[in-house]
Length: 114
Image (cartoon, rainbow, N blue to C red; front, side, top):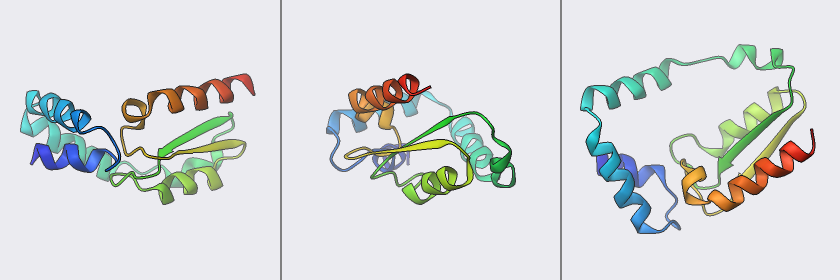
């Protein structure tokens, strides 16, 4: 199961070693913790509060994210005033690992724009 989670967390374009490393990290975590994480994510809902966000916001998403598809990042961007959306091609849910240079550039551009 944890291999499947790792596989779904990355882009099919990512280096396979990322899936192996993620799987190894997930194997360290107890099953109850992983289930708890998924349940917490499933129950977390602040969609009605997004329009209350008043600070500039960067929304970053991997183009191939299967865990939290791009449509959700687009929704955040549409609902949060003064937000910037960055879709990173060739990355999945763990974009910060898969495409760390592109992620860092996106953050640097955002910070420079503040």
